[in-house]
Length: 116
Length: 110
Image (spheres, each protein chain N blue to C red):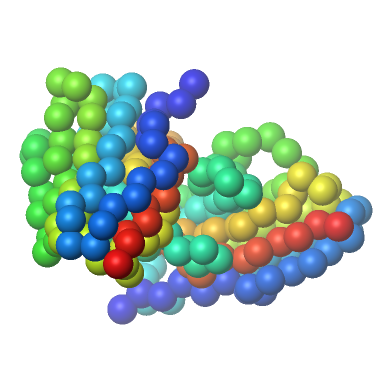
């Protein structure tokens, strides 16, 4: 059973517009959430994270929103740029869960294409 | 600053041959270390994690194994590769809940 779901395998956005990437999770005990960006044949790069005690975290063009009641988080990229085209993974963790402390559960990713 | 290295970058191996992928981390002590696999068109699957030297936890039963002979060295091995072992293998280390990934090794088993 997938604990972290990214239901949109792909998303296409025009340059300069907002990109919204969504992620749902099932385990209400998750307390730390992250977004990673991945180019083909490269390792994922950490983008931004949010703790469950917050509902928003912003870093430049990237903002992550967390809705705990809905078990939903989203990544907003404004404005979108062609260089943002990549696969985006969301991940969740239980930071104090026994021996697997810090283990991340990843979604399957959403491929973002930003068109000039 | 911390850096993570993986080698080789690309590997083509015949079915039944052994495997050894190496990962090293610089600039940190006693990190948690992880091996992931990304199969074609799929997400990241956690294979092994380690919280210290000689301590390995397996997440998925398979013909792969991992070892941590030194604090900042993590090795992924197999005695006999299967076709299904093809994929992109990623090593990661973690600090304060965030994992940082290496550049990956692309393995093709023929």
